[in-house]
Length: 107
Image 1: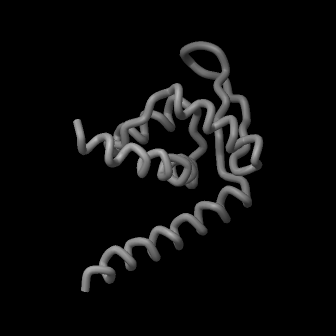
Image 2 (image 1 turned 120 degrees about the vertical axis):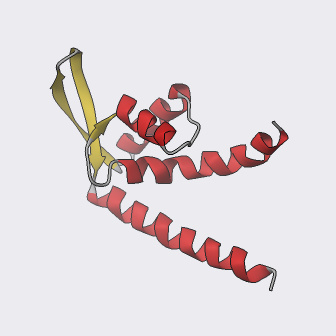
């Protein structure tokens, strides 16, 4: 449990990066994004993900289109915008720098 507390701030910081990556190659609706995060063992709650998705849409990082669903009402599928792709590229570059720093700092 104590370990979870140490990593919660880091996870909050990584959530936007992972959401952007989850829709990089395939448009997904919110439930699929949450499931994809959980599939890679990233703990996320709908109550955290949904507001973030709306914020990212307002910022122009993701766009949406409504698609019919075979099991209920239409769903809002999200995909990257050019600004979202740029942000994802920036995050990945920064992540590489952080990894290098972590590996080098103790030498």
